[in-house]
Image (cartoon, rainbow over all chains, first blue to last red; front, side):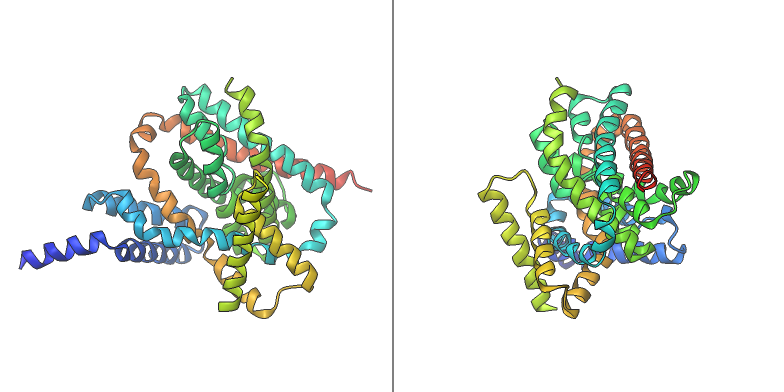
Length: 240
Length: 113
């Protein structure tokens, strides 16, 4: 009886089917909990799904590489999803065009703040150089951030994790932060969320309404562009 | 859905090619987003199919970050040693970024005539 189950496990653990299936199941479970909590920001579905999957892999002694062989099909969709952000952006374009000055100024200030504050705070608490460099691009979306981290001496796979946690943290705290700072304009709320927490902030913003989401999507795209151009320069004097 | 999904992939592919060909510092998908935006401007908006497909894809945007997030398993040692620096850096920097962006935007909106 144990023999066939052992063989079955050998087959399943070598096939991408399992990694893909558990990713979808863990996310649906996490999303169900999120809905049941009344979309409470602390019940962030990414956070819960990652916790479930990491525990599962750890308990079964499965390597991340084996898991990713299946999960890469989900990871791949980040590309087309980024392209799809053009649609809400287009529908909100009239509002965007009327806010060119606040958008450019907010983007520059926010992008620089995200990079410099992350590195300096980590340095203050004795993080090593590789960790500091991995933190620098934390506010831009995963594929961009990983590319930048590689260029400036960070660890791309660590950056991917830090990017995700930045997104989750932003989605958790944004509502409280905006309430305390009395920021109520959906365009400003959305744009700030997109600058600080890229796609995960954008996902949260789309749950509020389409305008907030569209501005978050715009901010995520623009901050990705700007950080890709700016960070190699800033890194020159941050890590001299 | 099939035509819309193909359009998204074609835009991404053109974006990737363009970025590599011109050696742009921008990631391919972001260039693809700009291309699709230009296309929508030319066509005066998305058709119903593209609208619903992108809406469905974006509705589950969070899911797409899960595989990369699970990569924390590769860095448990480093995260365990430097967790305080990482946590404070992420938390404080994220709150600061939210506030600075929002304040600067509000300042510029108000100063406009």
